[in-house]
Image 1 (tube, helix red, strand yellow):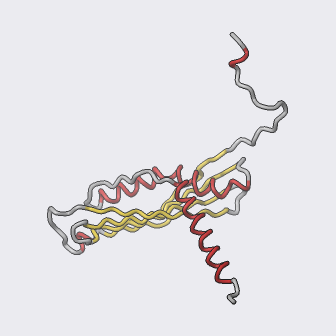
Image 2 (cartoon, helix red, strand yellow; image 1 turned 30 degrees about the horizontal axis):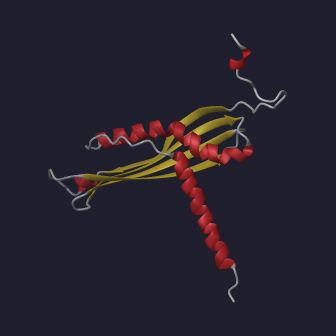
Image 3 (cartoon, helix red, strand yellow; image 1 turned 135 degrees about the vertical axis):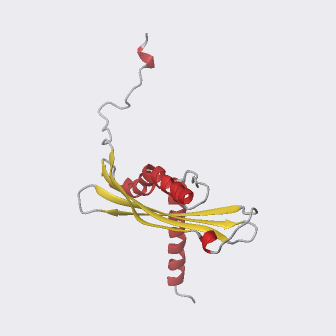
Length: 174
């Protein structure tokens, strides 16, 4: 057998990046609201075709303990009847994970908190939403996987556009 097939580690003496260690210390619902509007308004009929809209927002904060962070995912799910636009149900869930994160470089921490951490706790939030809709008298709603990287990029673009508007507004006009 030849040594040519053995992978190399690159340049000799190259510094290896620190090992990333991520642990979920806790998960909890900060807030949960479910409104069965269809039952409240006594909506009935067989022509109900739900139109589901999902909004997701993210937040992350450093905790007092060393290397601990709190990452919140907020889901707002609205189901409306396609035919007449009547709201069928509304769910608002604020789901939080507490993470111990070591080995992530400081310049990469923000995207790590808003992409990787929500990805880790998403299955639990999806399960809660599914159970709540089922327990509320509707078929279980199984959310599609959320692309947290795309959400992060959209938020960066939104912030850049707001900054550009603010900079333009601050420019003196002639």
